[in-house]
Length: 397
Length: 229
Image (cartoon, rainbow over all chains, first blue to last red; front, side, top):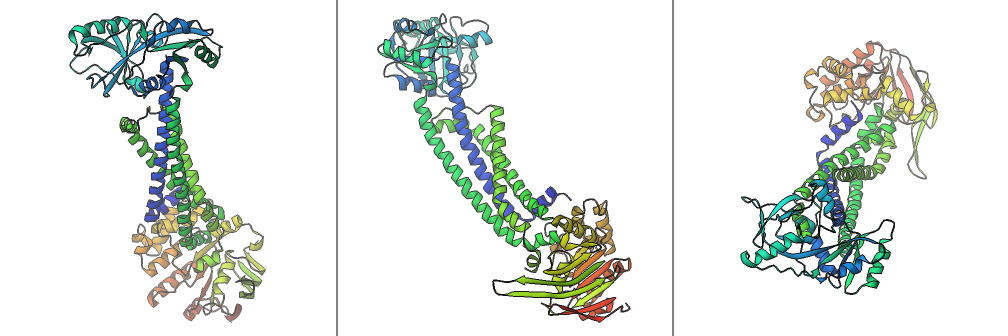
């Protein structure tokens, strides 16, 4: 009979104690992983969103920073405009390698072509674009033709139709971008030609008319030249231009990131406190059980077990309970989070993207390792006491 | 086989009080002997047995098993000695509740480092069969009677083919018939050359002894020697 088999039999033989420890570890490990996954998922989502944005600096109309941030983050309607002539002003700033304008059109509520209730339309200039073009080049091998659109991960063609009808104009969805967990997943990208054709069509076929003013834009995407300090370029834009504000990519979603971090780290701190308290309680439980098992361990010593064996035996039992509880708890939390991720992200009003498989495996392993180490630490003192007890006294009890 | 030389064991209860259950005991037990030590409760019998097994260390004097002085051995060496050369029959119920009968009997083989039986499961089954418990191998201790539990403990003590068996009140809590049955088993084992040191309060067991002693206030007195069995 091996140490692990003996430990498993002891676990099975001590039903209530084992179930209590198992459930405690399962709940706390699951909760800890869930909060960590939500934090990691939100960060991953924001990072993916920024990567998708593909610009070093986003120049937005003064006063519209929050609105645009929210539009990009959550796909909320936005109404922000600035003169088209700003493009040249920004392009003239030293260190700017490329500029490309985008126009944000009003979101459409309850569109049948979107997995979520709202859709965000971004019009880009194919002549100057450097954000969507790399994806098109890689996946389509060409740029978008008039009437073609690409969508975020949540955009789809309505059942029974070949096109997405927008403002009475049929657009052809030629591809979907990878998920980001942000408002960009419910964004439809189209060229200015398509947007103009859609606006013209709306005048005769749509219930609501779409107007596109050729002299205004919503944002300017800026690419900074290699080896030039982005922050310095942003400061220059702020100094040399009026009525517009540069937002550096890493600072985009900054307000949200701070709010989210505050909230989630609060959650995390509570979970850690609960974890520590649980481990102390489990330690007390192990101590109580150790008192009950003094004679049993003395018998083991009398039939040949060393002190080291007794010590390892108690720690093995504890570690196995930790392992089982953590694996089940974490697996349950992760699968629940995966299944209900949209609902959770929606109710918390935050972007969320389930972490990549390697990240998830790392989190899973770290959670299980933490549980095993914590439980082993909880059982350390009882294990030492049992291994070093006075055998003659223990056998008389 | 087992020697006590001027062995004294004291336990310190607190700053002022000390008890000495074993006082200057000397005893030499030869291989194959069946020694019975009688005495009332609290006279130091169990402490003497614990000294023989190295479960406690003497305050003074020397305990040797074979050629090994227990005082000079490490915990690992004493544990190894216990698992390979000594079988223990406890006074109290000492079977592990989560293990079935067969696993309880096989347990000491786990600590014999390959020096015990090569197939502990098979040997456990043979021992249980010999002791009339073949049908109880898969049951758990709480499902056994007191006599059956005692027999399982004897089987466990024999699993590693020990040279010395230390038995503390092996027939306590047993009715007369079961007591005779258990003593018959122990005598059979002894006839195969295994040495026995039994401590008990039952005078009836003296009849089985090659030599018998009485323990009183920690001192050992010979009652009879080389008594025929």
